[in-house]
Image (tube, rainbow, N blue to C red; front, side, top):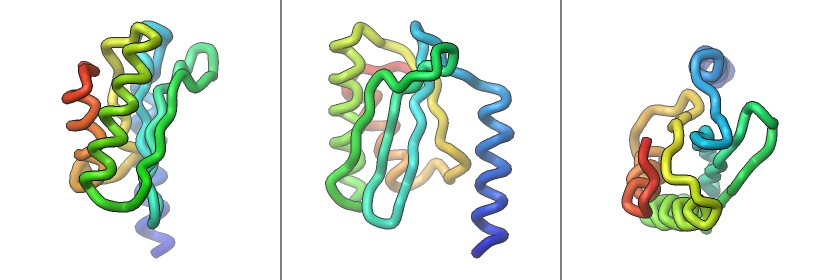
Length: 109
């Protein structure tokens, strides 16, 4: 398990070295725990979180709904585009649902 976690952290650092969020185009970062899925819009230049959301449980439907709510919060702050950061996770399941929900809500990557 340690090797799997270490590999994910290396992928995460490799991606974050290449992409970054700005005020106009923040980074949408996803974290997947055993019980919930979290997503944040981050401005890396200022080092602040612009908006965040947490799913209520670990289902894919809940993650998609959370993505839509995050897109609504972003539109309230007049954010329409972002950079997607899957944090080293595979683009599958809850991570994919967050992305699709955000797109459905109006965010563009």
